[in-house]
Image (cartoon, rainbow, N blue to C red; front, top):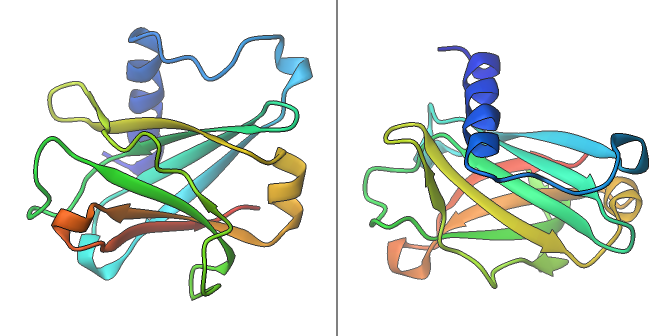
Length: 151
């Protein structure tokens, strides 16, 4: 299954489980999709982040297609927004989004979903040269498994 078909399936699955991204009319909100690239420890897996403008904050939904085989279940994923690009991240994250780390299973084999809120507006994130990093839990080695530059 190609990436586009998989992501369409994930969005449909999330919607069918009542996992809407926001309330309000589409004209009131800006939505940005960020493809996440798997790192070498998670090669072959796919994921995407969706950012939704919520005024002074930004909703962030992650749809993860796979994690390394050695990641314990249930899956706990840590999310960070770093200044810089995936090939050259800043030394410290600008935002640590780890109040909720337990990922929800989407279907039996489809992947995982995680929803978060970033305490910054979408325009700030888009203009600041930031990247989203998804990492395994400390118990699973704190390995970066996905990264994507916010356009």
